[in-house]
Amino acid sequence: MPPLLTVSHLTHKFAAADGNMSLKALDDISFEVAKGEILGIIGASGAGKTTLARCLLCLEVPTAGKIHFQGRDITKARRRERRAIWERMQIIWQDPYSSLNPYRKVTEIIREPLANYRRGERAGQEALVRELMAMVRLDPVLGERYPHELSGGQCQKVAIARALALGPELLICDEPLAGLDTPMQVELLNLLLDLQQGYGLTYLFISHDLYVVRHFCSRVIVLKEGKIAEAGTAAEIFTSPASHHTRLLLSCLLSLPGSAAS
Image (cartoon, rainbow, N blue to C red):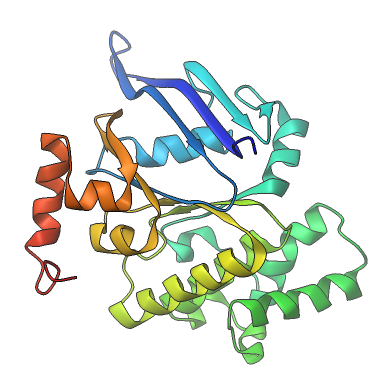
């Protein structure tokens, strides 16, 4: 079976403020994501993780290289093509409060993609919203509340429900657990895993939390200054890292109480 996503020699540069130099945020990145896989992307701040996500979603046009999604080249997709891509590829952003419209109720936020893509009549859309809320284990009474009336974990569940509304195959999770307490992180990870297994979803899981990546992802890519420092299965990366940079990152994990025995 061909890979769901193929990234080939992807490079992206940003112009410096003075216009005389450029910052290379991504440098010759190549990898594949198989259907149903959970691929982890780790690296220090500024390694290029979010820039990579934005390029995959066609929110940034890379300087060089190719992105193939479901066998189609989407590297320089135009507006109509991007709309079609977003039906099959969605993202869960790090901060749910800033990614949700503060002036809309929960049910309206989840229904918005269905309305934008004209998926059925309003009654059918509202029925699907109820199903989506149940899928992400949100109490139906929360449907009439606004984001500021919810906890961070509840808001992230709203974001997940909205991301699932169009039935995507690939979900990009950009630090989806950041800022949440440990019980809620565990709850959301279990939810994501149940959704992945139940609906055959594919995840690109971006995180700085190495402990989570170690236990959640099947394969891991380590980024350093826009380049791939190392790639392999989670077992390979976390038990016998090949690069010095990866070993430095893992030293943070090994310093956590109880992690060495995990």
